[in-house]
Every structure is written in C-alpha cells, then in structure tokens.
Length: 90
Image 1 (cartoon, rainbow, N blue to C red):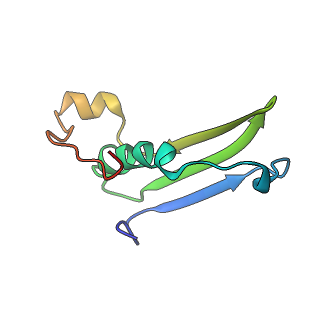
Image 2 (image 1 turned 30 degrees about the vertical axis):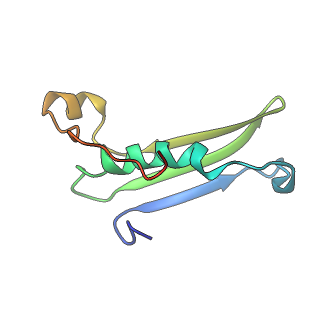
Image 3 (image 1 turned 90 degrees about the horizontal axis):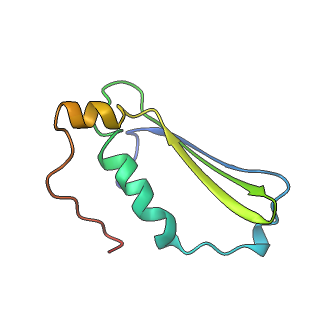
C-alpha cells in the first residue's frame, strides 16, 4: 500500500447490507479517495484519519467518505492545491 503507516482508516459496512448483492467497480471510489489523500490529508501534520462507510438508504447503496484533513478553505487560502494532479484511474 502506497500510504502505509501514514494515516488510520476505518471501513464500516452496516449489518443490513448483503455484501454479495452488490458489486462496486474499484474505479468508482478510487479517484475520490486519491483526492482526499493527495489534498486535505497530505497537509495535516498530526494524526490523519480516513473513514469509509457503506449503508443503505431505501434501496440505494451509499458510500460516505470522511476525513480529518485541513479542509477546502485552508487549501485555497494557502494555495495548497497541487498544480498537477495525476490519477492512476484516469
């Protein structure tokens, strides 16, 4: 794993989800995670945390991604957004 030992993460799958009933293409979520890792979490100096949660809303599968990164406002204020962003999924 490229980011091994650089942040803590949790993946939560709610009990009411039949994991065999859903297939999620990896490249659907990977670009979002890469943005989180290469922007907000990258500039956090202390403990970094990433949380991924899967749950059902009616019959829809929801994937919620949250982190404790520095936030969009701080990234823009200090011009911390990388000039060149290359996604391996593109």
